[in-house]
Length: 300
Image 1 (cartoon, rainbow, N blue to C red):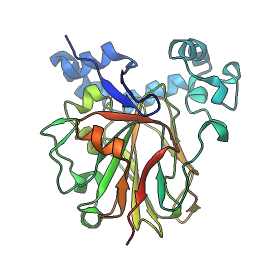
Image 2 (image 1 turned 135 degrees about the vertical axis):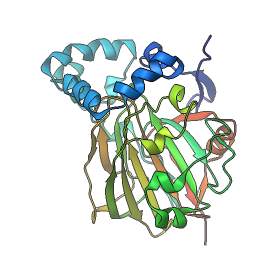
Image 3 (image 1 turned 180 degrees about the vertical axis):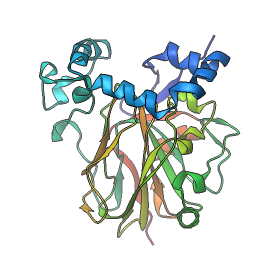
Image 4 (image 1 turned 120 degrees about the horizontal axis):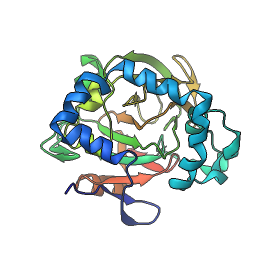
């Protein structure tokens, strides 16, 4: 029997079991030999994902909204619009929330989480013994698509924020600064669910992604990577190169599907929150919301 996926909920202080959207399909695709054949032939391909995204943009997909809200107990009190006002499922999927729903942790040197989700931290990229499961390493050069950037972030820290389909799917800047680079890195569209990542964390750097670097005063250069996934062929960036962004300001959003963002810091620039470090050392993700504390700048 397949094991359940547990995470630590920062808001309740307890370990909880994740309700995985499409779990039976994911387990067949990534744990069954025939499923893995379908994965490589069809599921990871852009054409399949474009077709599925097209379906979620059709007016007929509107009928999926209310059942989804009910099944996954989505708190519509946080949303700027009512559940019956969305024209398509994607319109609902990348819904906007009220400012009060996600207060931003502020203060001298505080970094906030960029997205709702389940977060995994690597405090020191030069000493990665495991990620998600024992024996998996993190290939920084491939992930960033640049040897130069990889050298700059060598020995730094990364926080991987995994969004489930039930989560709020807009992502925000964890810091204030200027966007000095933004580029798309082409790739496949594997799932970023724990079912997939526990088999191969390399899906993170094999998937299509958008790299943005942010120059800051307190944290040096910060790399922010938005990662596509199965049924997420579209990563919509709402701020581009040259823009000045404030902490908590929206950077972009994902259309339908599970997805992921990663925030990378230079060496000795950030002290990560203790619950992130402690739980990640046990390959356990921490559930927290956009705007919650990620860490604090290290005094220099």
